[in-house]
Figure 1 (tube, rainbow, N blue to C red):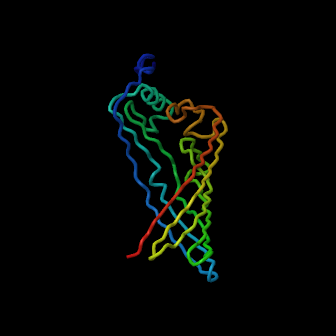
Figure 2: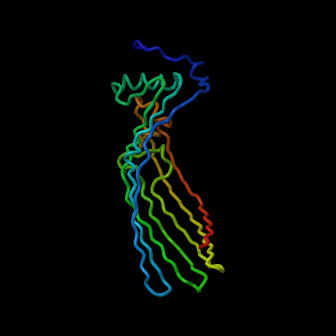
Figure 3: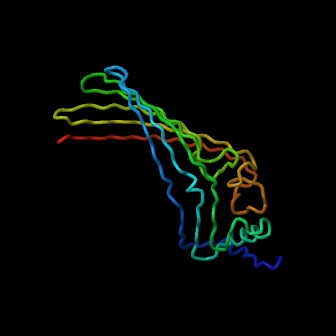
Length: 216
């Protein structure tokens, strides 16, 4: 069709197996914080963090052979966008379009006794996905992290610290709202595998940390 060689139904069904290389840049990160001793027993901590997610905005996948789905995607990209997305028969590049994120967290510590310190914290985790460019390929978006814990001093300056955290993130993508995921542009066959579908995601997980320290 239109001078293009389409993969056969058998080739599309039998994707097979092979090797794939993924190229991306890990974003840099920094944080700053302040700790205030409000009373002899109460301490308050505030942290501000920044992550350069914009450097992670492109994921390039290189396969060791032609992939039938990508062959179709390359044809659709060539006809529909003039090759703007750069899809090849053995490679694809996802432009995630992420943005840099600044977020904050706070915590408090109460010295219950000479040995026991009680702790609690909260961290706001905004998404690196811009509001005007929703991306259903990234399951975690705006989220909230809650944590509690304690520190206990043992003999001879030994210490045990325990922390438990819970994070939750919920997202809804109405039909055709996310180019990467459920977009309805027929030229974006590779980027919209769930075209027109209503997508809801909920990610929640528990974190547990146990630390033993000894001074010498």
